[in-house]
Amino acid sequence: MSKDALNDDLPLSAAAREKYQELVALLACEKYGPAGPPLATTFAEIEQFGHRVGRMVARDVDAQLTEQHSQQFDAEQACPACRSPCAGSEERKRRSLQTVDGDVPLREPTFHCPVCDRDFFPSAYCAVHRWRFL
Image 1 (cartoon, one colour):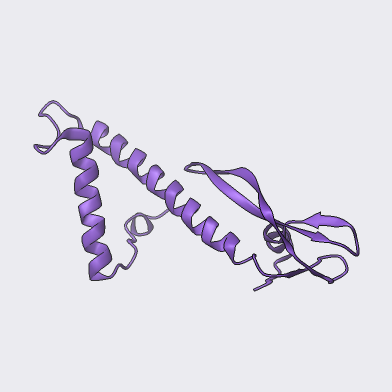
Image 2 (cartoon, rainbow, N blue to C red):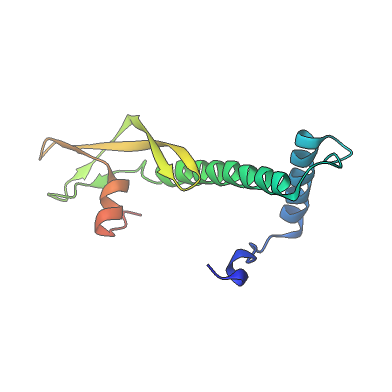
């Protein structure tokens, strides 16, 4: 990865930037207190803390977006085999996705085709076949 890619920050609105800076200050204070890191703290220790925070934020963003994405599958879906309309189940399968930043919880929607008498998970099927049910 290039140096430029590592410094490619997300464009944030003024309100989001302000909240982001508040979060950074809160997390730094949580770790080191209001005065900041003690004099004997090394940059490596500061960097390690930053990476831990980054992984935590990445997992939480992934979890929130994954949950929002899965809710888009609440509507009736076509069976991937016979294309019959199928209703979703209220119950969702809980799984843990392994990411580069750690495990992220997923509540996967389940659908049942009465014609084929099979269950399917449209999110998994979409990813494999690049179909969009939206």
